[in-house]
Image (cartoon, rainbow, N blue to C red; front, side, top):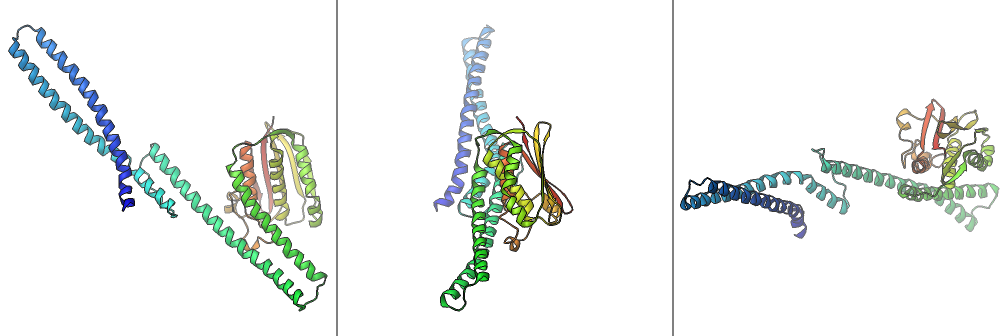
Length: 361
């Protein structure tokens, strides 16, 4: 019962307060104006000198009555007009309140129709965008949880089956079985790392301050490449590095993570025979790093979405081989935004170039 009354009481309370303030302000203004008109007119009439006291009093009385009638009429009509106009102005706020209550109850409201371009209209536009983003975020997280629960189930079932068979003596352990068990455990470790990426994205997206220090990008690039030497050699991938010296002021740990994400992405999706080219160069007032190599073809409609959080170009069932959470590039973009940098993709057929820029100091 209270909830139903509250739905109309809160907006009406604001409307009544605004109307009351308007009545008080307009009333004071009209009262002062009437007082000034009354005394001015009386003084002018008295100054003519052709009226006796009786006519002067009659004039003053009639003028006083007319001013009272005019003041009351002006305040009443003005208040009614103000009430109607303000009621129409705050109508979207009522819808905003109802939508907020629906969100609080766990439901996503329909978009509010915007008919104005003022501050209220802008507020509603931002609210609609916020609801849309939250809805998409929840959907992505649901899909992510479903994907992970499905993928955790398979290696866990395999491990449990093998271990149960070994325990009961159904099979005997050999190198091949132990190798399979190791692979399944590595898959589980990899998926746990992907869950850590989800946690990391939540932290990066809310971060507003980053401690920065001057660093030579040439050093960071060579350092990052050195971390992947074993992976590159194991995959039989050649890499060529050409990096110029250039100093930027950044968080070394975060920018190293971006570079590592891009190199890991190039290795993970590598497909072809050519080398991976890593090039760092000075371009005007920025340092530009590009990582090029052959890889799986990226459809045109997916190129603009590849830096969105939870977005993956490959299907969910391919995640175990090449895919991730779809957060690596999104985290990289968020980090570069905090550093006033940019990131992008240039793709021609099966040749892809991921690039990033940072301002020089």
